[in-house]
Length: 169
Image (cartoon, rainbow, N blue to C red; front, side, top):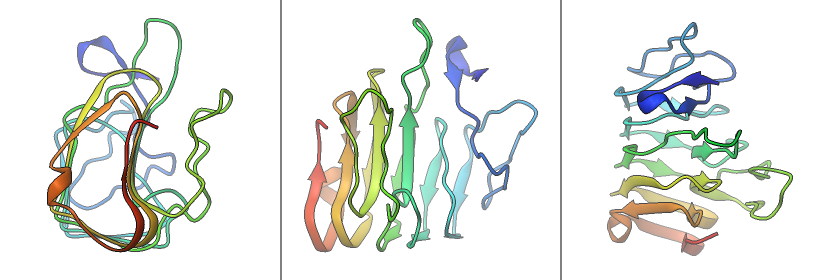
């Protein structure tokens, strides 16, 4: 883990160190922030960091949710920062094909069904915007853990989604 803003730990943005869209991979610093990630076809990958805009993309066929943010439980007094991320105007097909055990152990929560968007925090308060997206053919459209406050939820649309919004997991 590397220090992010306010001295909090930030997870390396991509385990595969591949740059996506207009973002910039700073592999030596293990941080990604204040980037625009847009107009891409994203498969078999994911992004995790803070103050980013994910806009105008199509996500389908991914092992985790199409957009997955994890703020994991880490050492006492250290927090991962996901606040300020915006997921706006994207289209999501079936994702989370491999299921997501999140922080295991301890379990729960887990998300083991097809899911479009997942925002998880092991306890650190996280504020995000999830707005104007279309999610289809998933069991859960948007999955949020208890520590996550999301704005814009009512502006998303859903087709063939069993549970459009699953909050307080």
